[in-house]
Length: 321
Image (cartoon, rainbow, N blue to C red; front, side):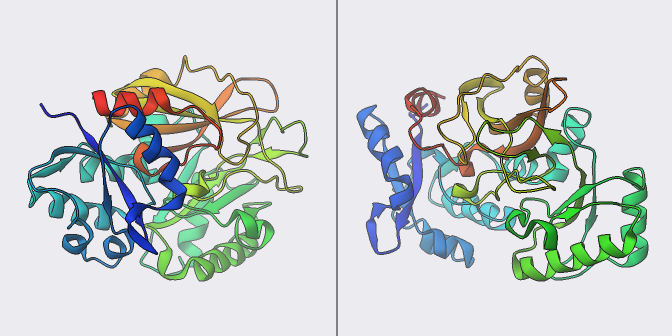
């Protein structure tokens, strides 16, 4: 079987070069003897997949993608356009959706991640009061929670469009959800998710951290953290898994210089059970010292790397897969 190559987004201002955010990965890949090709991310987002992949050689064979987030439907079009050129993404469209969207992975990780429930919704459609009341009841009907969609939150509008102090206050739930949907607009993915708020160990230089949010702004996965009682980040790790094995463990991209040593004992079998080839898990240490929790699962192709990390082993593993 041919050695896999990696696809990176092209620089919008210079399509013959990688997007500046991923240029260092492309350089490292070349140093490792790997091969990369460029795709037009804007064309992928607008549904012009054939145009987006025109620089990928015909019959290139197996490929990984390392780039900006794509909606699951656009990823499926991406895969189809590459298949028409005799190429194959090593993460299938079904595998991408499973790892990328919370309903895809939650059933496997339930019990190891904050309790969650969701309401499918079309873009910009606010769930009605009865739907929200039923969702709040599924989380126990009281206590704090986080609002997000299947992929992202609005952490930077924490009190306005993310944090619900009390699920029993259904008027407050409705206000936060309505504002969240308004701000997400056409970018609302899948529907509205309510996640139980949990306290995590804060970073030494921050006032606190929370769970139930999504992670990884750099590759299109929304930021995690932020305490309901003030801004700040939790002690959090990002783990990269290939074929069910951890190949890189490092800090979250929002705190790239923080040393982390997460316990993977309980997570390892869950990643294997999920069955996706290339995924990430974001883990946070609970404030009460009771261990590590999974705060997010993501597709490894669109999960950001923290600046300064040595990604040699990760990239070498991908081109050897």
